Image (cartoon, rainbow, N blue to C red; front, side, top):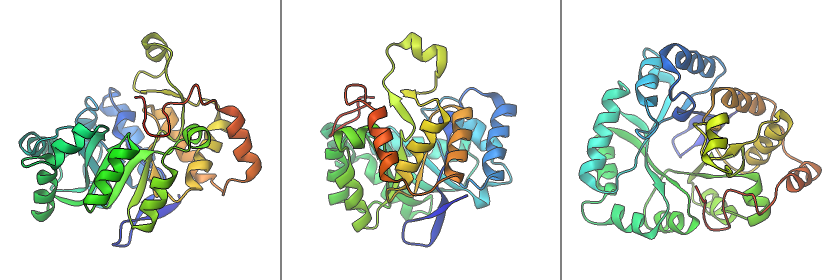
Length: 288
């Protein structure tokens, strides 16, 4: 497994992480198999959120006795301090842990989101207080808007950002390249989403038939997945989370283990594979 630096305290994360959405609805037996596979293959970065169905319960049980060597990240969707604090406390209880290595504002996308979390009695108060109280070690946020991400990063000290780093978005729309550069210069670790995304679903029926836990149609061919992962890991990111499917998580691990720096010919293959009309977002935002 490849490990990369997170933050400024000498923490090394596996270049691929296990997202809780990948074990949602699997049941304890099957989810424990995926968790064991991850740990056995050197994955130490685990990410989950209350919005991922029963994933917190499954991950809490699956990590029992193995929490010590895991970098555990969680999130809150709430924008006010009261509800976000309740969310945090509930997640700590369900995941059977005394603290989170990383706690994040979930799905920041609009100026309204920013205004609410940064206001008096906003969710940022929860993060700051919880860090002071030792309930979380690092602060972060996931974001689908470059404008909102820049607002948060320019006004507050975050340890990391969780953003889409997708071959099609970057090659056809130049999404977030300047944001990644900013983070690199300012010691903000970049964690990546949607690395293995292909396009938006045509309709709900298409999604339900194939990958009901995926908000987008993922790449399916191993050679395309390997190139997409190679593209993302060749940028200066710390780690990425594969789509919400256990088999795709395994393919993401395999692609990471096979990683080498991407070359110009491979970038052109990806560029020809994608289409700006079918990408999951624009230069400024993600559509899902």
